[in-house]
Image 1 (tube, rainbow, N blue to C red):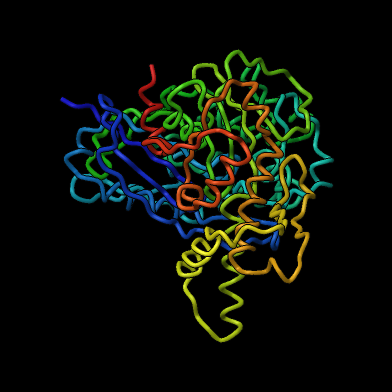
Image 2: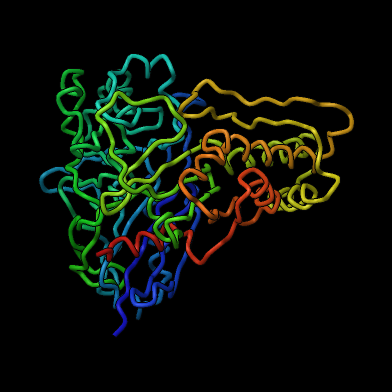
Amino acid sequence: MDQYTLGIDIGTTSVKVCIVNTKSSEVEAQHVKDTQSNIPSDTGPGGNKQDVPKIISALNLCVSKLPKQLLQDVSKIGICGQMHGVMFWNNEENKKAWDMIEKDKSVRYDVIQDKVSALYTWQDNRCDTNFLAQLPIPRSHLRVSTGFGTATIFWMKKNKPEKLKKYNCAGTIADFAVSMLCNMNKPVMSYQNAASWGYFNCTDNNWNINLLKNEDFPVELLPEIKAPGDLAGFLSENWHSIPKGTPIGLALGDLQCSVLSTVETPQDAVLNISTSAQITFVVDNYQPNSGPPELTPVEYFPYFKNQFIAVAASLNGGNSLATFVKMLQQWTLELGFSVPQSKVWEKVLALSYEDNAISDLVIKPTCLGERHDPDLSASIQNIHVGNLHLGQVFRALCRGLLENLHSMMPREVLQNAKISRIVGNGSGLSRNKVLQKEVQHLYQLPLVFTKGGDAAKGAALAVVLD
């Protein structure tokens, strides 16, 4: 009988689930849903928060849409999600932060609103440069940036201590989902998610506990740590036809799972452009140090089987293009017209691919800054009357996005690593032929799209790694 694993990816804008046949590594069924979970921040434009009940509702809906006969045969569940961010919840002795609603000999897990915080995402900018400069230097090869879990907790302790005292658990959104499905009292976190939070030493795979205690950091909120691939626990009840007792792996990073499902040879680099943008490849024999971290655009994060991945992660990806499209739509509204965003996207993509869209306009679309340069801003140069056609502007924007990523991980880095091709994934890249052309122009390497490139599939594969 075929064995199936369920893969779950709780992303920045959507939840995706899939059932993978472990014998063939093929996806048998899948479903995706936008969470529409963004909520106003109490810190103004610098904050970025999401509604946890909406995210978990999207997760329930996605799983319920999969074929019941396949769900009944799921042997393991793998979960990954957006990294760096943090949420808080309160598990009392006899009352968890979730309810299990029975229906048709199965349950639906629902979040209790007043027992969870919002999800403070990786895009949260409440920790400005001045605030980060006041934090202790990590004993880690990885730096701490705004949007990282430990930085956000430091900010909450200073600015909203009473709110922080309401909770006794913390984790990423994927860690919360694992805790909920296993009905755990306290969360358990993988090295991958711990490294994305900061103040995690990858040489001994432990938090910087003593350093944090000296700063009066609430270390009791830090989850227990285990290796990627370990089991977190077991499904506490029948869930949308998945049998009670099904093993569930530790929550993993969506980037690592995306790489796992994409690379086919050690000579592959993976380029992902979705909400943000990353280019990465697997590194053998990397030995992290205990810090202090260097301010460099390329960082090394834990992968699987004691390996690391070299990552250039830009905060400016599909979100920069989406900001431009939203601006155009707003302008049309102010002019008295209503144009759906889908039509705007369709038009700018078509116009930018025409030959006359090539121009000398220079756009640096770094409106969100970068982790290695938080004060970086966007700019436009070389404007004249001959390069203001809409297609020219959007093409220059796409080119600038890739040039920024290339400045973080230049072609020479891939050459030195013996990379022979770039494997693309992410909707922001697969749907944009201009971006694809710029990738090949800058890196002088073939760009291919494989059957992989899916973090949900990667999560399903990770849970059955030898």
